[in-house]
Length: 318
Image (cartoon, rainbow, N blue to C red; front, side, top):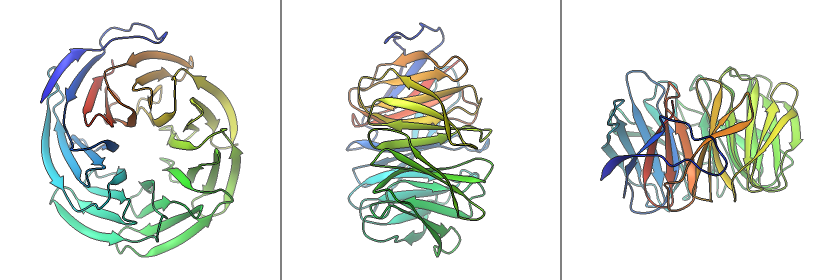
């Protein structure tokens, strides 16, 4: 069931006009832990991954009604899905599962292409390289594993000095890879050489999510310490710390407009921020449980959020 309602501002954020939310309740049979939105102009597809052991795809019509329509269910992700990502074409999807496997799907053909096995506990977050040629993951060993998308073969391993890797991101220009760990550290690597370039003691608690700016100049880090930090990606230096959530910040995503970003938290709220002023613009308070994932569409005008309440919300962000 879906419906569209005006969003309620709050938490000290400006009461900006034009923010609305479309809800799709009972989108999965259990909590939804992962979301991605295709950046392909020919495919307006949202992908969600759930503890119910499925990945589902959705079409979100870009209109005033903003209806969310189910497309496909991709089963077989044993023990639940913790992370999903789409390549630049929006047609290839990677899903990281708690059964120690990463599954690669052609979501246009509804076809499982291959299964990658990084080893017990060594796949939690997953992301594609900017050119889609590689799939990157990490886990309990504190090592980033990079696999060839075409064959599923291991291409390289990048060791860190940290414990469990909880988050991972590749810069849009293809030059940097960042990963966040349970000790609050962030490690950054030169993609070409595989050498570490920055080791940052970013947070006092696990780093749940990372996001590079579209111009690859800045990196956002979201943590269980309740803050989001902004780093100069080139030099590894902090340029801001933002607080506003009442609990863990579980997800962060940069808008394609390069001016805004969004966060989701275990306080059940989604916030939209202005990167220039470092201020919260709006708070969406419609979820009934913790928000595990946020993802923008290709324009930055719409934002999807997913939660343990089993729902997908699509927010209009003027």
